Length: 346
Ligand code: ADE
Ligand code: ZN
Image (tube, rainbow, N blue to C red):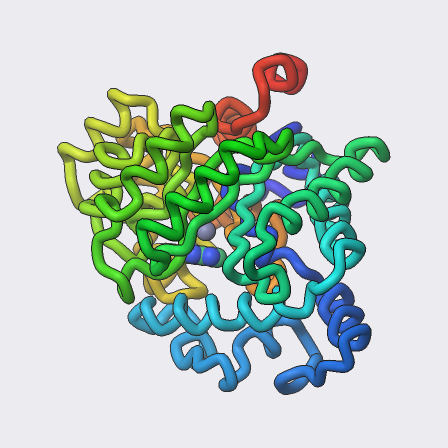
């Protein structure tokens, strides 16, 4: 059995984690108190709050892993809206950013790409770049204190219009913010259908501005979402991508183009995308030769940590110590850290 201490000691990156999914219970209680907001239910654990019926997450509240997935994810996204709505000042934003870097450091993460979707942060509507600045201040302070280095993947929401997305990315490209390294898109594809064409121009603007591209697909969508991400959005990485396993030609394409998948098995099981570890395709993707990394997605509300998820994956899938070293190395290679930092860390 590979223990969590051994995993923490491996120098690694995390490339698929949402800042919105990393607020600890104490972060949340403090924010709620500062804003005079009541919690929507028992505060025994963050999982209790995130699965409270106010957010309508029937699949998750009935134990997770047995649902159909779509209601689990969309209810979960509503929880993120509520939670991020509690971050209202630049100081509060910097604090959650700093806490994220500290949390990553505690897991032995030396560099992390972090997805930030400004549409969850209601108090910053129309001020998305100010939010990026406030978060960057927290990441800067963390770096000065020797904590995990962080690059931001600015995320569009699946349901945004093409015009809103293009406007956001044009402003982002213009501002050329040092910490923003990539454009992302997340949200629930079950509620929107295919969105590759809609975001094609936005991603083209990002690519011209030198931003990396990472796209949620093959989670709430099937293989077609992954095809669109590669063919239409110039994705270098896919977030999740697990349902690519259903399409042999797509697997061949991912390998040929060196596109890596930021896989999050615990998240998939919690949100009901797969019934359990036994049916999860991670070992099959790895055996097929796809570049897969192992990530948490939203560790805090899912009650987990990177080392816990790596340990349970090793246990459930029978991974060896060498396999875990491979995951650590691939995570750094797949990251959007700049070349100098990558060279230092690898
Ligand atoms: N935002 C946060 N977690 C997500 C997930 N698992 N899928 C899509 N969007 C998300
Ligand atoms: Zn995600």
